[in-house]
Amino acid sequence: MPRPYQPSLLRILHGAVAVLVPAAWISGLIVYSLHDGRWGRLPWHPGGDWIDIHGSLGVLLWPLAIAFGLYALSLGRARLRRPENAAALLGLALAVGSGKLMSEDWLRQGELDQAVYGIHLLAWLLIGAAVLWHVSGVLGRGGLPLARSMASLQARPNDRPRHWPGQIARCFRRSG
Ligand code: HEM
Ligand code: HEM
Image (cartoon, rainbow, N blue to C red; front, side, top):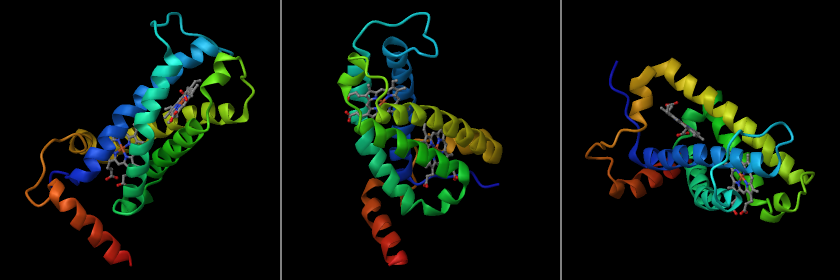
């Protein structure tokens, strides 16, 4: 089997998202445990204003998630036919969309019955499950070589950043 190769634009966007989503997930868990905890709390919390930390990670994540989503829906459309890839993208859209509608004051004021907060919590569970499914799909299909191809730092000579505009233009010419 040839060594799997991922386009460099996909690797950059996917890589940034794949770092920030687990960070948002874990900081969200700490926020949940500190300010909600209806279904349990962590035995220990690191110090700091975790709503602020989580909000800052969210601010970094949402523009990247939009760029990654646009990539996946256009240049990466063929891969979205795999349900586990599509599920990861849907989980991301729901988590980021409901996060943008969250008010940082709700949890501080104990307003745990806000509908948007309920959706944000649901999205947290869904993206966790979707990413586990996505990663096990990747490992099941192509094993470590496929997983590693997404983290590789090497780009082919015809797949450098200066080729990205041409790649995007070709994609739209094909579908237009
Ligand atoms: C992977 C899971 C999660 C993702 C991707 C995510 C993403 C986001 C995003 C993008 C924002 C908006 C930031 C902004 O632009 O202001 C946000 C806000 C927020 N999220 Fe999450 N979130 C996740 C899980 C959680 C969990 C589990 C909790 C706590 C129970 C939580 C609590 C909050 C709060 C309180 C805000 C408002 C913070 C602020 O605006 O400063 N999130 N989240
Ligand atoms: C953490 C959140 C993650 C999200 C939201 C996510 C989302 C996605 C999406 C939407 C695609 C399809 C891209 C396209 O349409 O072009 C994709 C592809 C891929 N992802 Fe992830 N991913 C995540 C984490 C990971 C991790 C941790 C790995 C490493 C094991 C990984 C490995 C891959 C690989 C190898 C592909 C290409 C798969 C294929 O050809 O079908 N992803 N990812």
